[in-house]
Length: 394
Ligand code: RFL
Image 1 (spheres, protein in one colour):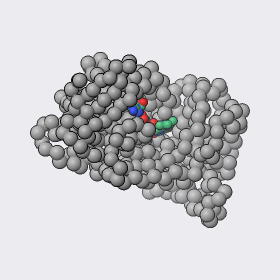
Image 2 (cartoon, rainbow, N blue to C red):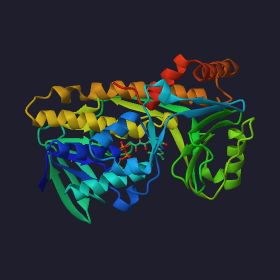
Image 3 (cartoon, rainbow, N blue to C red):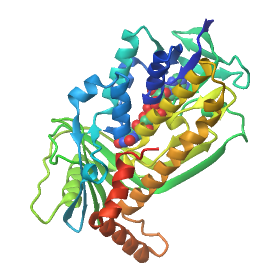
Image 4 (tube, rainbow, N blue to C red):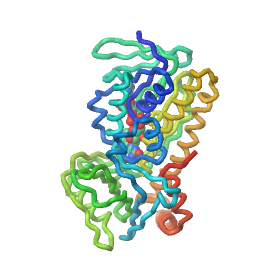
């Protein structure tokens, strides 16, 4: 049996940032991760860091490699009717900038820095089970290399993502669950081709949404709207490039660079949120507590935000300041999560072709167009978009 102060389940952005911030506050933790180190350092997911995320990583000494290897971004492009509309979000929101940096790179940095500082991360921890979360000394049981192991702690941080074990360990009836599946899916690809843009592009076309995201100088990420129940086998490479060329086309002769597709999959678009984000001594953070549609690129940022709030609350408890911040943890995080949820949903409905069976579809399409025109032409609407996209400060 090992003892620690905070047992952290999951070495994603939430769990790893939490482990660092706790250590900086003098609080011990052990991270238990189901996958291998190599696996989590290769897993392709998000890539856009909000202003506040960059600031937190920088201030906490976790962002050196990210700052070296990522580019600052100051605007984004919305395309419809073959026209390009730039939203200069930095100008519209006090000069704040965003950064493009792949999630797996950030995870690799956080793992390396944590291990170098003597932190403990148990990779390939199997059959993790939480016990006594209602008590003052909860226990995590798991298996490692076939051997049973136990970790006794004061608090458990459930940072194990949407499919983890932490949330289901909370007794039935305790959590209010909010769940909304959007009628859109995304074919996501990673291609070995330099980007054809310097800024992220979101396009609405009559054939559906297309997105041109950025990763590195040689690798680009693209998304295409598809049916949420579609099968990736229906998307051979030729079809993907045809759809990207068509949906991203502009009237001014912009061209799309094409290259080998390294990876492709289909992601459904879901909004999911539980309240409260805690039960007893178990605190949920990141995707374990909420999922947002990926359109606004918010999931990883929200996860890191939760970790920051939780670290502060736990540190305050150990500093003898009582449990005020812990008691407020869920409300503090949910306030931001709901703002992000609303923005991500608004952006998703603005940028996707509505399914054929949408009630009153023609009317809703006109609303969509009115929204696009407003956000791309009004400085006030642009500023509101910028505040949410770059990361609202509260
Ligand atoms: P993570 O990153 O899912 O990390 C959870 C960790 O917990 C481990 N785990 C367990 N460990 C021990 N025992 C168990 N029983 C466990 N079960 C799970 C997992 O192996 C993993 O290492 O959650 P976290 O830290 O909350 O971070 C959240 C972000 O990862 C997530 O919000 C974003 O990646 C969402 N997301 C995207 N967000 C964006 O902002 N932009 C994107 O383009 C974008 N693309 C994506 C995405 C999420 C995807 N998923 C989850 C399928 C693309 C995909 C495919």
